[in-house]
Length: 324
Ligand SMILES: O=C(O)CCC(=O)C(=O)O
Image 1 (cartoon, rainbow, N blue to C red):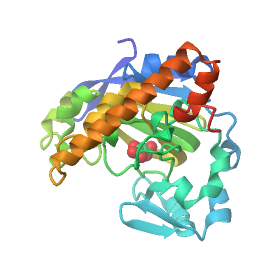
Image 2 (cartoon, rainbow, N blue to C red):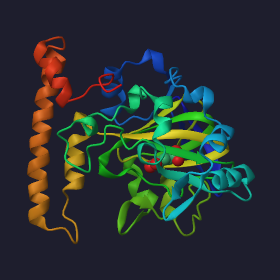
Image 3 (cartoon, protein in one colour):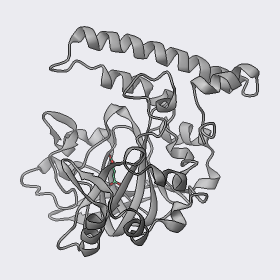
Image 4 (cartoon, rainbow, N blue to C red):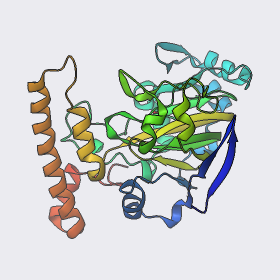
């Protein structure tokens, strides 16, 4: 591969790949689905949301001025006053990293922020999650839009891939953030937790003790960074780890489309300890039905997009733009 580079890790050399970058204006939504989503190919789209007011207004000062007294959900089991959180982020250094906020669903906790990121990033359009016929808890027209916020040295707490076989798009708004991605084929090299197959036992992929985790030496990292306006697309089942070099504010959405639907159904209906097989079977039947209806609607939208039928079906199977 032309963009392979050799990088040194303690004790060995590995091949590392740069994540492809494209100007967002050169890529239509359909091309994105065909060339990246369907192919499971990560990419960073540059200048993906020039219309977002957040790009001009969201700074640490903006949040400290307007939302200091809000209680925010920072990480698992930890909530803080937003003002105190921002103070801790400002004190964060690579040697002594502060907290990393990654649990704040914007619609639930600070809906006043929504107009600043609306209309959403088209590459992060939640697809079938936005359909009114999606059963709870997957009926999420906002794609679980989350705020991510951290200072130098902070990082997402664990390398993982997203649940529900979902894709993710993370859009940078302020500062920068670095990503290391690993393909699904590297799963065995990522040491999945025995009870949580999508979470790695490796805490920090940039500092792995290879004597404890020797298989990690065979994993091939894909490296990329996002700045304001850049959006990184993380295909389903791709492992990812995020690290903040300079104070970073970004947002994240999940997406389910026709392309990752089968994997979604298999994932959420898989046999699981503590779940009745009969219930999982009924759920599978229900989701298979929803999938068939949505595939039919999407077929009409594709073949006769301007017809009255397609316009009616847009309500059932929303398309980017219809929700704005
Ligand atoms: O911190 C990040 O950018 C990664 C976010 C992420 O992976 C997640 O929210 O699942």
